[in-house]
Image (cartoon, rainbow, N blue to C red; front, side):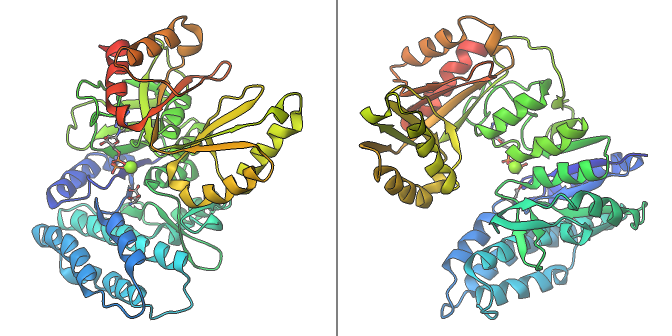
Length: 447
Ligand code: ADP
Ligand code: ASP
Ligand code: MG
């Protein structure tokens, strides 16, 4: 029988009440042999990142450790779980923040510190399940075969292809009557160093395990009614989408929709495993099914956005009639490991946007561009809004409707991007207009 994967995000495991709901959900699926993947309790990864950043060999850090311990103890006390359950992790945290092992470099310290969030939450969820009568055991993903390289960085490392068969082998040895509760987000490299799969990547861990085990489906349990027509935090009238294709979901994630990690679609789509996105707080809502093919019912399926992408315009008269000039420009971004979000190209200029979080790499790339290009202009404080839908390419007037709805609100579109036959249309605008632009576009296409 094929198993199901159930992934629970930070808010779903963030309080005693929601952990009880999680255990109810697991219990209801016991006949499908669930494998549970968990994130850290919400807010904990941010706290751990901050702690790792601020730690110095001569600074005392008990305050930070107390804050993190209390965050967990409060919910553990409520669930009747002994505090000693996470003693080992807290001692490890103390050691890492106090630099007792000086061989660990900065990045390695941060990944090791961050991994403790998922290592604690998996233990707590497994203990709560046991307490409530569901046999469960906590596992670190790397003890079940999930390994990565150490590149491009320990904080967002590439998964080793051999992990898939290693996971299948590891599961063959597990007791089928006990629910494994596995850490999302974290892994290890070949040297035993803790690595991470990137922020928000527990979704990706879930589909990796789903693919490795040939699961019948992967459920992503979160705090929204599935994938919606826009981020419900920005657009109160956003509606849940019943069905969406792998391709659309991947585009939405790539262009910023936090509900799904961009890498999470591929392991499932490769094997045709359906993904369901469901709301832990509204279990009667059917949520969203992500499947291979859907029938479009309109040009747009959903609207997404990214705050603060950086935009660069490179222009030079030398570009005209010099095909290798543009190749040199993209070569610079490639060498600096900068991935481009959108980028209209003309005869005399190339404009591109990329994620603002790349701050450091960008300045070196700009210097390299300036070495051969006349005019390189960096603009900060931008935002991109992307309309995603497989109907876009076949529906005349979609671009006109989009432009009209933002220009009516007095918002200037700084850049536009839509590839031939593509399922998305991106507009770059000034960041301060982002909520208004998304709301207006939602009105134009969905209300
Ligand atoms: P989890 O902790 O469960 O992984 P996340 O915070 O990572 O949850 O993702 C869920 C959040 O994604 C929602 O609360 C919502 O604000 C945001 N979101 C952004 N775009 C969308 C969308 N199109 N549909 C649903 N949620 C979205
Ligand atoms: N805890 C990790 C993060 O906050 C991973 C996740 O939530 O998916 O990024
Ligand atoms: Mg998430």
